[in-house]
Image 1: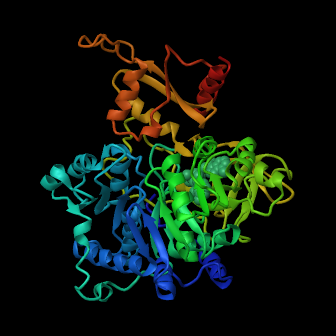
Image 2: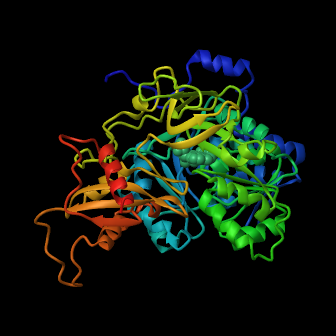
Image 3: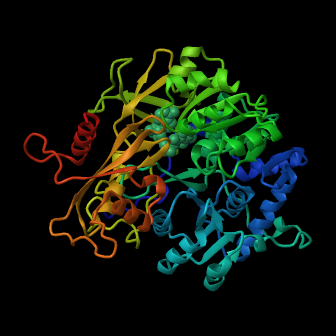
Length: 581
Ligand code: J2J
């Protein structure tokens, strides 16, 4: 159409007015929270990460210095900055420093690779990309060098650690070097006026069910609403020690209540650079951690390791589990095996967060995904036609509320490097801002849920085309799109298959192209062995968690009935045929 839509969809005025009148939205920013805690109790321990231990006063001062340094390099209010940092003090300081400037962080995850990062940069016209030098054996400087060549608007690559030889030749900057000397005067004096509560603070990433990433604009006022309402539902106060073990840029360990909730409460945040039991258990013991969060497969790993650990885990009061279905069995084991209370968390980066409450009866704690954290959250369970289902029947979960967004970020038109419409499956024909939200502003979660009479939700399935691999969300459309770009592939369908550890993993059914090149002579392997397919995707720059766990080379897809079938029907038939053996 010709009507220009806002880049950052907002709540209609009547809702904004109401949320403000009810005190759900306040004239407060995430920057204010940090300054307030620093002013109230500057000496209290805010952050432990590796060798770094920062009080609230230290953290606030370092954030101001970094903000001044980032400003000096030319980062300005409203600029988009793709941040891809593993758990560490650098992530926290960078995030708050960008906020202070009014620049908008696009929160990539450490697992993302060239395909995802190039899309985030292109969609947002990012001016800067902030990365670690290396993490878990992956060198982000190489990735930065590859993508920056194609992205003229990306003016800065800033490296936490060593820019290295690649970095030096590309003019990468050192994050460390951006901090002005402490005696350079009060850095805060030189900073621009702080952001407003209604400004967009960051872009979160949607799990995604389409070929292109959907970016979620979160404002200070709505993100803080989610944080405050989450703190009401969770056992996190000033004496708590929250351990961030999952990558903390993800909405779950970020604001549910996560590290931002912990800072809001004036608690201590401890960051684990990896979530392995040895690292996590050592931190729990050393820092007397009281609460942490995990996706189900990680919780299973911790439970298995807890059986034989020498570490003292007695400080741990609560283990939050969410991001994917937490089976009743897993939920039940947390108490006896870890000595902690389980809290189920069913949330989404678009907004709504549900929690079981610690004083809920056992059947609620282990058998439900809890209820919304805010009384202002609106829930609807509807059938495919959009009509409410009878109480207690499963249906699609729709939601609206003071911290559930009304739309996705509208990418710049004609962006390079994004979806290629010539590649089937790589682009989303449907506009997510039309399909993911109802006319009256409800977000279609794509989850199938039952609303119990006691108000708790049970997630029973999924209506969206998305695979949930142990909490990591995969869009079949996206992976199929990448596969179809392979010259030797005629067609591909990516489906979920059940998995004991991960809940689901992915299987790609691949039909080779007729007349595809003959077996490669060098190594004697035929083209399109499953291994070639996964290697191709990895080289193509797709995040590892999106690489199919299983690849089946087939001559054709089963034909169901007569006539044309939808992609969704095809995927369902393939998943069923596989389950049937
Ligand atoms: C079943 N499915 C779940 C659960 C999320 C807190 C916690 C999680 C997320 C998250 C989050 C589930 N049981 N307990 O942002 O703040 C699936 C649903 C949901 C989708 C959202 C938070 N918890 N899910 O996982 O944006 O399908 O957010 O719609 O990554 O994960 O994924 P995401």
